[in-house]
Image 1 (cartoon, rainbow, N blue to C red):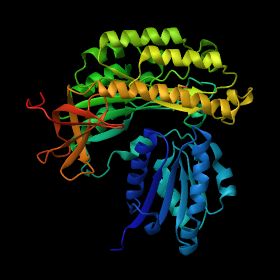
Image 2 (image 1 turned 90 degrees about the vertical axis):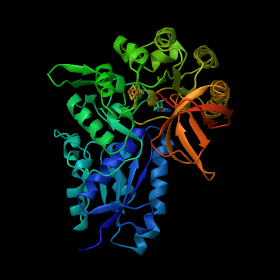
Image 3 (image 1 turned 45 degrees about the vertical axis):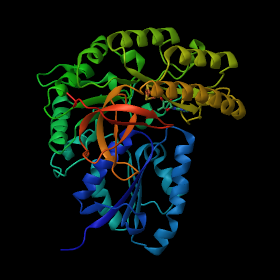
Image 4 (image 1 turned 30 degrees about the vertical axis):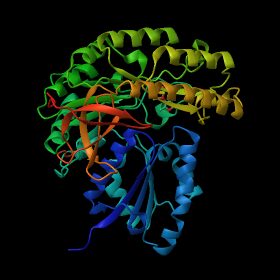
Amino acid sequence: MTDAKKLYIRTYGCQMNVYDSERMAEAMGAAGYRQTDSPEDADMILLNTCHIREKAAEKVYSELGRFKPLREANPDLKIGVAGCVAQAEGEEIMSRQPMVDLVVGPQSYHRLPQMEARVRDGKKALDTDFPVEDKFDTLRNRPKARRGPTAFLTVQEGCDKFCAFCVVPYTRGAEVSRPATRVLEEARDLVERGVREITLLGQNVNAYHGEGPEGGDWSLARLIWALNDIDGLERIRFTTSHPNDMTDDLIAAHGQCEKLMPYLHLPVQSGSDRILKRMNRKHTAESYLRLIERIRAARPDILISGDFIVGFPEETEADFRATLDLIEEVNYGYAFSFKYSERPGTPAAERAQVDEDAKAERLQRLQSLITRQQRAVQDSMVGHNVKVLFEKSGRQPGQMVGKSEYLHAVHVSDSSLAPGELASVEITESGPNSLGGRLARMPAA
Ligand code: 5AD
Ligand code: SF4
């Protein structure tokens, strides 16, 4: 028997890409590849790319440049670009970087084995179709390898919202939901393999409307309730959501569904109605704030996180202050913030741009406010018990690290703990990025 060929995958961007990279590794597993952690050993290198902001795409090109010596040392090494840069730039990648053999969009990675055969023949392979067949279908007979305690599960892809700054509707295409039966099957399979927490993924996951087992569409809430019945699954999360798709049943699930964790990522992007309108967000600052109130009424301890863009075209200091006011009012437990970056082909790229210095200055002010909030929320955990799902060993000997219900990283030094264990922890300290604690005397219910 010949040795397996080796595949090195580097993943950029969001959790959907993390999920896609796992699926690509499985597809290539069927073509005789096993994964390696070092590009130097690889017979094939795949970059799973992100196109959401300018720097993300530029990083890919500079990374490709760095693989040049490897390719010179090993002419049999094949190099591929996958993901959203592949989708958006397709042939341009091959002309800009002739050493790229293969370009595969996010909807076509189930075709990787055929594409690999083509590049082994010395040809180039490019596939950025939105095929009619379901790429998830090919994943059903995968090997039953043991998994860690947490996993992502993509249930929805694409987006029909067309926010004026965003490339997702173009790179990932129209909104598509996977049938509920398939999702439940995959969830049961993950649980059999050791997974205890599943994060449902979608670019606009709360718009989920997958076909139900008896026909008719299921909402995300309905899907979550069905997942709640799976024995051995302890925790359910979902990301990322649009405010306008926070339906009543989903808000109610946050109050009633015991496995649904009290954490919600609900991006608002800006607190200025003028800018929200120009962003084509189809909601106002006020409607977002009222929504947060309703969610908190259903689940008072829920931790809210968000995304913000500063320096969107025509954003004034007054608009920016409105964003700071909204942040003050919501009190975020976590947030991601970005300087607006022009994405070719999106409506906002054509408009009057805010200068870079103003963007940088606003980003700094916004981040210092968010950091203060985050830290205060985290510090407020000290003295309380949280339930932690332990995932892996920490940096210190005998230390284990896991996540609380609120997604805070928590470390505990206790040699009795193992990955996959769920335990009550009394929080004793709050550091810059994580909490520390000791096992509480009462076992987790
Ligand atoms: N510039 C800056 N940030 C962006 N995002 C999406 N597109 C852009 C862009 N062109 C941010 C949004 C989104 C997150 C995933 O990335 O905040 O919620
Ligand atoms: Fe992009 Fe999200 Fe807006 Fe869709 S809802 S266009 S993915 S920012």
